[in-house]
Length: 66
Image (tube, rainbow, N blue to C red; front, side, top):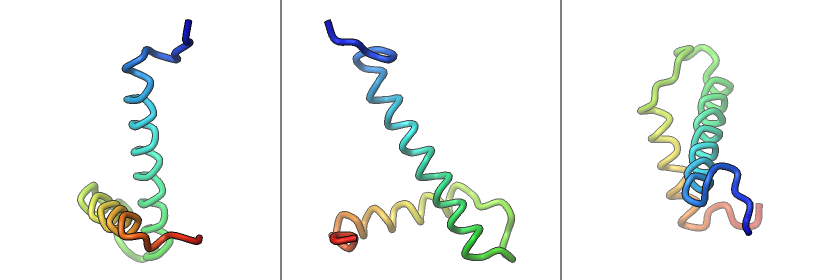
């Protein structure tokens, strides 16, 4: 019998939520380091735009060989 942390359907949802939140935190940290004199709170809109750009670059193969 397979062992699941939450449930068969809940485990993938949990993993996706953890991955998205980790990406969100990293993008916010990168933006704060890049522009320290900028706004202290970076909004969801900016983070989503940055994530979209990174995802498009990844899909296009810009990160191969890193």
